[in-house]
Amino acid sequence: MNTADNFKHARCGAMKAKNTSFNLCASVSLWLILFSGGAGAYADEVPPRALSGQTLDVPAAQLESGEVYHITPMVCTQLVWTSETPLLRVVATCNRVVGYVVAPFDIEEGDSPLLAGAWRVPVASFRTGLPERDAEFHGEQALNVAEHPEITFLITDVRDTEQASEEGERLAYSLTVDCEVTVKETTATVSMPMTWTLQPFTWGTMQLNLGDFVVLRGSFEVPVETLGLPAPDERSRDASAAMIRFDLAFLCSTVRPDKNIDPRVKHEDYYKLLKFLTLVRDFNDPEAGYRFGREYAQEIWNDGPALNRLAWSVLDEADIERRDMAFVEKVVKRANELLKGEHADTLHTLARWHYERGELENAVKFARKACEHLEGLAPYEAAPIRQALESYQAELKAREDGAKQESDE
Image (tube, rainbow, N blue to C red; front, side, top):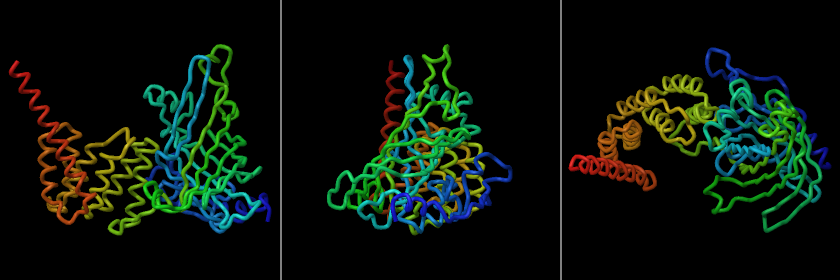
């Protein structure tokens, strides 16, 4: 079977009936279409997000055609949007891309290493480094995140494949990938030179993720009007770009990014916690996210550790713009009540909640209590709790010393 036949086989044979039974709330919102429970559909379109929101439901035909590598949404995965004019350069980076690519189970000489793939990019997770520029980038005149929360990519063809190098089990290829890119309901077909590198599992790669890796890198340029964005006119050409450049570097693993490896945590609870984070962090949709969070909290209302994980995620997870402290208070205090004030992790969360509110005395108080209940915890679990107490104590002492110095003067 040649490359074209391989690719065609990987994309055909799956149903197209959409399953949107996984509703996030009673009202119909735009982001409902981003999640679904049917992995047997969508061979010829971008699949919906899985229950966790942190990968996509891979079509059954593609699951059968090869090895699936899931994009790992974190700092090792980047999609960079660059627009340049004589006066202005805008660079926005998104690390929360989710999706997958499919490789043959066994790559033979002359085969393409890439059979299929798709990914979704939450527009709200594009960051320029300047809040004002982010607001413009996400706003109605640009990408309009309120009505168009995602950009999607679907691989439609792979060609010009050449093996570039081989070092032991590490294989590298160069290839050209055709993709359908959809921005604000406008779809354009682009061609992208890419490199594909297979990195089998080593003990050194464990710090990134389990499993074998594929690293995809590529770039392309496209006119703004091709993506449904307004082209600059005579008056705006110095400040509005005519071309957009995309650069991508994706770390993809055979282990799903939403895989639960903690036997103490129920799979369904873990997926729902990730879904909550997908909404409040990746999509920056606090209204939908905390609504779902309150529903989820009610489901686990008698499970102290699960409630604590929910509260801690709001306090500690990076890139959450709105941290609902009243929500955290209700959840963590219920967790502490259930665990009778004797659970180090929950006391640690209470200490952090007080710290974020500027209540250093109470932060130190609960951090001390947490350190009194470290027995049974692994060293890597106990260390951050001790470090938090030391940090709070040092900050409280510095504040008290400063206040004393002011009074002496």
